[in-house]
Image: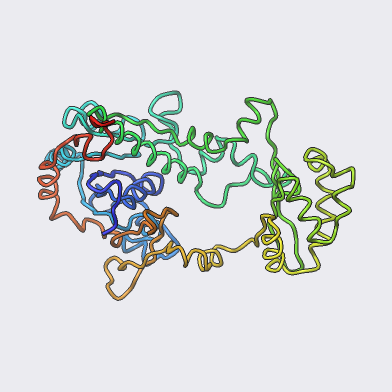
Length: 408
């Protein structure tokens, strides 16, 4: 069995749709036992989302299948006193509670941080929300599209003619989920040293701005408002999308040596000595002229040939693929990115569950089983709570070799 660093960590996941479930999926891949607490009869909203109407009606929409493999599902109505008591029993043995309700919802149910910390002082509680638990927008509803707009992300996506544009996947949800997984992992390490849990208040808006990195720092440090650059890389030239004889090609000749190699390979050595393109800043200033010269040369060969030739010359270059092409690439197959698991509720079918790009001791992290049907583990709930309460909480630091020894 693959050794996973979060094996033995127990997560109660009350989240819906994407940011929270994506977070708990990462924790599951690293070995955590994740139990989804779902609303009876309907469950995670993502169960009803996706392009396949039949799957949506069956409560296993593709949006749900995408990031819930390897988890358990228990239906609990937290407004019911008896079912709330079972949830509290589970909390007593949990390591992590993850939720993405609007700020204050669990407090109003009597299950806020103060109550949960009293039940389990070693608990790590992570609340994901659009804007955080405090501030003038803390009660505002938020979806990925809203965060993309408010973060400024859409204003720099596209060209001057087409911006603002939404990024083509729910990037703010994804970044929020990744930041939550990182925060929880860090908090668990801290707990092993201190013995105390903590409350993590994660704002998707702030996580998105953090992920925008240079776009933000260029303004707050240099006072340069970012503008949409379309297919171009604002930090260097030639760096962006170019056009071979049969379609687009990304090239990132960000260094002087790469620029020289690019010009040499395409048969335009003269561009190296052209005063318009002498150094990085000159090339950025005359980006349009340089791109036109290179596109004329690149149009003599197909993109796949330039990808090979330029890569061999040390110039980062690659075709622009469709999602189906990317998924079927030899590189992903070699790395074992997808795992075949049983399709929930249909043993005759299989489901491709994605990994996360991490290999542990030479092996990809894989989902150990299919996504659960709604309430699949209801009958196990009481026994699960008893099993979890039987474990030591918090675990001693030496179990994970994080505390110094006498020999250190």
